[in-house]
Length: 104
Length: 206
Image 1: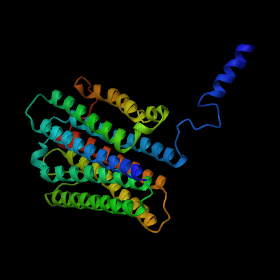
Image 2: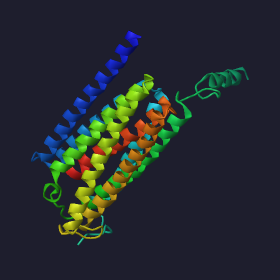
Image 3: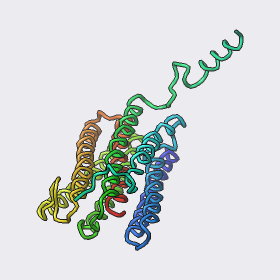
Image 4: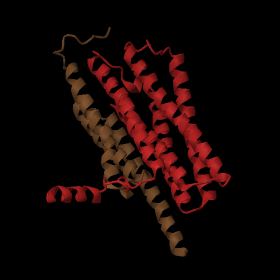
């Protein structure tokens, strides 16, 4: 029973550490957001911190580390589909598309 | 002939041969994951649309001049913290300690309410400044459209999450309690946190 109890104490400690890491990554994202750098580099760095954060949440908090590979692969579906949607729509914004509605 | 029988036997012996659980979860947890995946696509569509209108817009207001970034950072902190406490509630539920689980759930709900309160304050402030779905004082109508739709939809998810967590906490307090139920509600809550990570980075910081 004591050993059982210790295990849960370890689980709580792990979650506290995960929380600290998430706060560190949030601070990092804030730092990137406030730095005066090239917009594209900024976007790339924010994608990196965001992916790191969602990985930490999914693996530690959503327990993906205990799940079967089948379920883990399934969770990548939205990410892949979002990348497809993005790459189909984004070229339209690059300026050579004449049918794009201009605002104002 | 022999090879086709061998192939059939190979398939039957695999995860997908029937009578097995290819995803290794309870049906309820699997359904929650399916819901999360479809909901993630909805938010992906919102955020990509926002990226699109922002890219074709000749200018975009500086977020630091429009939004109260201290409040936004505080809201982010609240949501991450409530997510961490939620994970502890699941651990307590798994350890068959409903009393502790209810306490952690209550803390999670408090975090959710603080987030919602802050967001209502943010909405009220911006509406008072003249921001509407179709126009705003910053010259680019798309920013307030994206703001109200994305944070509104996310806020509604937080609100639903608070309601679900309240039901789960009440059931746990009454002893009608299952660790799976707490974990499924937790999955939803963490997902709401994941969405906010995207909104925070790409709507407020980029």
